[in-house]
Image (cartoon, rainbow, N blue to C red):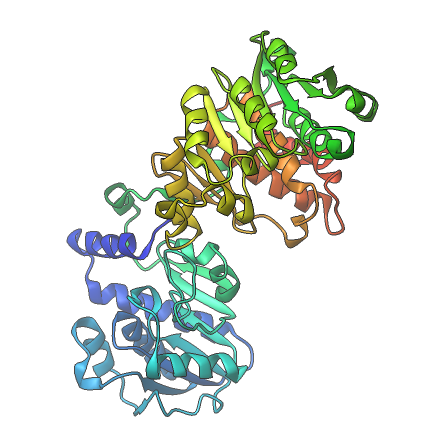
Length: 496
């Protein structure tokens, strides 16, 4: 149930099901019944207005209206368009509706306890305008609870973006699998509670559709998650290096180092200017600190090849020195770039691509602002529609893993795989949380976890740590909360 299908992939799944012998009309009947079941469970919804569009989404609405009427609900149906222009299965199920069909452009949306939005769903091909947009805006302004069929009308299923207008739903009923637009903002906020209905499409069609987008959850990476062995020792679990700036900005590096240790790295060293050494040495006894006054000092430190993974960026400073430090760290190592390291390459994404080619693996962890600065002047990335497409294009452009952060963090790989997070609570948006995420990523990479899976796992455990810490958390709470998260993970993975 973790695969996410964009509208084109969902259409292929429908066709594959029909080719496998599932009647298309049966799919529509089951979809409409699923919608009716959800509406029937809503409180105080005896008067139901079903707004039907001109396509298959509208057909689902006609089925739902018929089933609800049979169950004793007072149902009104309004159609956007002409009934005579309905075609195929939508026309067949509309013919089974024996009640009147009102003009949706004129219907009184206020004379209902609940509205079923069966206008467009995933079939929307362009921005809403004219009468369709006006109707959706009236729905949104009505204050009535809305149950959306597949997606709130006006919401793009591939991107989660609003195309003209969209009315927020209290519940959305989708079919077979969710779509990226159910998880990507603002779509996630507009969908309300999303229910996935089984309408008879065989799971085997996924082998034919082969979607590359998934919900970020343990099923993606748990087989590769580093679990300590009884016979192991700290040197088996990697040695991560966090490159820190001066004393005034050292807090970010300390948070990252703690995150790396709690994520399981065997050893973590902070390389920093001498003025910051006492702060690092005194803040977390398990973190080692080494002086680094010049880039050459980092080069000398990394002469020890056991230091296999390096994080640069948190509190490091922006400019040529940081670019030089990145160049020193990259060859043959696993590298995480965040914050100042990314801003130091503003408008020069091609240079980060060079880093990816030299490194054993590269993960970048930008928020939207850092992403926009890094890819300034790269329209083939920035002009892609939606967060998912931008992250994918960036990963392909760099040849590395992109973690595009936010409430709907996307992890994208150069081969097109992508995972969307849905477990981060709102209170995770706090100063320093991103530094801890970069550190967790460092810790997992240091233990040899493949880069895409390490980044996805880091995002997930970061969100779970926030949930474990609870409301009111500060970034310092996150590394400590990882203990509870890891305990549950290890139990699930069968570790004693």
